[in-house]
Length: 331
Image 1 (cartoon, rainbow, N blue to C red):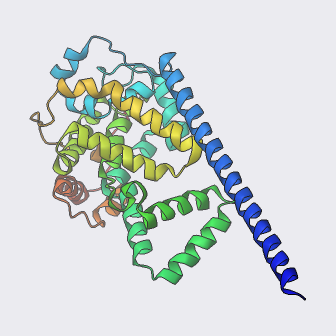
Image 2 (image 1 turned 135 degrees about the vertical axis):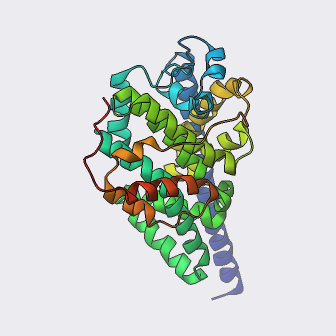
Image 3 (image 1 turned 180 degrees about the vertical axis):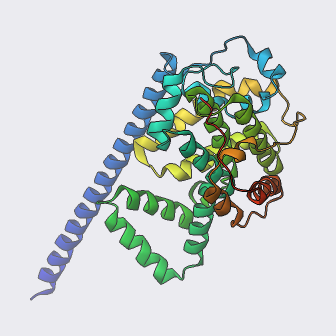
């Protein structure tokens, strides 16, 4: 084969490679442009929801009532849930019983008082923070080859399993520290939901208002021990929820837009009630009606945080009492 032939082959090979690379690059650019377009459309759809009143800030009386309410701190901390459910921000128990029951059943699998108390105790003692802290520590401690294999396995399984897809996304975000995933704190995510469950529990008729208000004081103690302002709590909650949701693409864009608008909607309340407003300690009234097995499980947990000590002391005090009939349910 002559030098000219070799030169011709080399030129054609280079041209083919160039065209292939260009086509791949263009395909990738088009795909990314399409993804950006999908995300923008999802964001616009969420904004349209708010514009049309799907989620509104409403008051039964007015913002000044929040400042005077003994549980005003809890009302502010959980205000985004009231907006999401179209319930008044200044009423502790969500007034619409059907809405409360539907949210608890569909989002939490809660249909009874006992199931509600089980969820609340879990959030106090364990919550998602235990699982997420453990998985991040495990992933980051892996040697590179094991980590690479896990990423490959989860990527393959993600096509068949929604759970694997969510786990794979959390893993990738943790390894790459996307959105600061390695440093996300989950306490706000857990304890703000305690306040929400307490309010919805009153609305659904599962909790007496006195015991629900008392529960929110315990959650407030933990939140104020960890965070220093309403803005810091809102940021921590939003980031933790993003990690938990395990979604990307248009769904992630819609989620982020929702959270941004929820925060904007309720941030005006941050000036109504100071973050460090004096609060009394919780008496953990509901523990008198909690199954002893649940209490024993909680007592076995390593509850080492300072804010958990009141809860742990109340659990142990309840367990030291003679076993007897449970208190009547609140309806």
